Image (cartoon, rainbow, N blue to C red):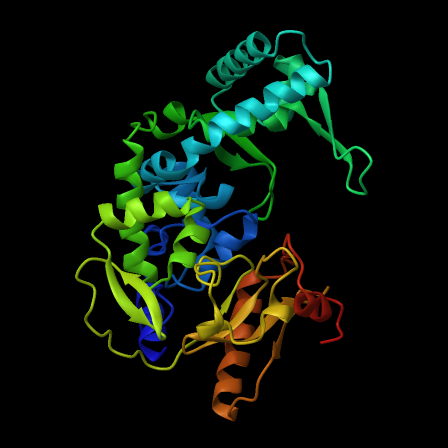
Length: 387
């Protein structure tokens, strides 16, 4: 357990900061980005002197990083070369089922009598509109392709029943096919209203279409280097692959078996040497951070705090870390102040360092209030002022 924590501290840039946001993203095999604010807060925790403008420049100006759909149908900010690997290893496999689902909805709900032809035409017109504009929101695209304004119903008879625009489904399908990516959002860095752009236009070239099995091996090697040792449960959960594909990828990348807490585990090829323990460190990580969401079997760093720090669907809230383990959580009150709640006794020096880090985070936020997309019991309590 101590060795795993030492690796986490060094390889996730929590004990020693990264020099750039590109370096941090590559080291973690992507910064989790389903919640727009998470990627900025994750970078702040890991990159020396990080400011919002640094990530915006990397994403929207230099475009050395890109926000893409990846593992587990989840959004990540990745270096472009790694995004191409993720596209082949994970994303493209989503497209056939997503296309079948959309075609069935279009036919069953009377949108069109010929779903195949309708979808093909709407996709091509949507791409043409993007080519003309460079980048556009779903609303802007719907003005040029009126078919995108149609509504699809879901959950009939259920408490969560509702409707979703065809634009949402069509854009998700195009993204899963690697043909479009999310561009600069409307509004501030906490906005989730993204513009879209064709991959070839935004990045200067389409994703190269790597061979999927080879890409899975390459991606798994990168992840094992950052997160190993791991269990098979960790591999299948993080990647979203079947057990068969996970085993094939382990063989392809030359992963080596190790004994892990009395059971079987895996490390990257040749990655057996001990990692020196880092100096004591603290970190306040955001909801859905890549580190806290990096493993399925979390007891070695989470302890028994999951009930307070995760929601019912397994989404992590904001966490407080000390020397490779989670010791509490944090949240923001309405006035923007950062509040911390510790879930176990700590010595006074550790408490003081955590309080100092909370003060630095509050200063960095300069009044911006970030509400996680997925609320957890502890974060709700702190946000209400009861913590």
